[in-house]
Image 1 (tube, one colour):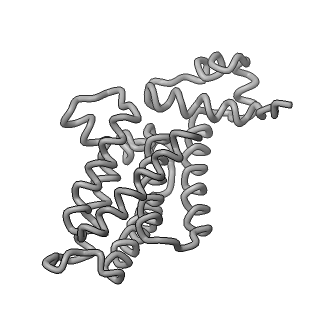
Image 2 (cartoon, rainbow, N blue to C red):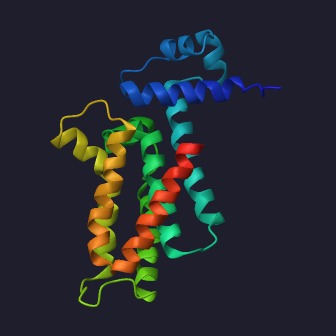
Length: 215
């Protein structure tokens, strides 16, 4: 028997999709309600304003990220690194409306500064880079500040969609475009690694990608 999805969840999913497609400002409650075939009154019963919808979506994304970090159980470094990267890129993709003019949107929604969440994400990435060093996966002639390397890698992931809009002029970004960001991230990382380490990371990415395709 097919599980019935609660109206509030249907509203949130439609809101996320339309916010991502059109942007927060250009989206109306009327079109969100129409997208799932309910009245605007029914929608506002669950979420009185558009701000409430956006705040809930952003809050859910933060909680999802926090829950993942709390549940982490270290495994092979290549697998852990790929899981971190793909989770971050997927979360960014699914909530890309929140990253458009982030500062202005946070002011409109009166959302507390999100730098704490960004710091936690960077800290996780930095710890993964430190694990790569501890496992002697960097080339012998590799010499750089690990924090600077982690910062460069984080910037590629975090600001990839900004690059697509500002330098490639893309308004509608597809998952294929987002996958190019994953490739770009690895272009920064892989040359720093030994040949055997590069193979482990490439294998981990290929395995994870196959699993995503089968889901």
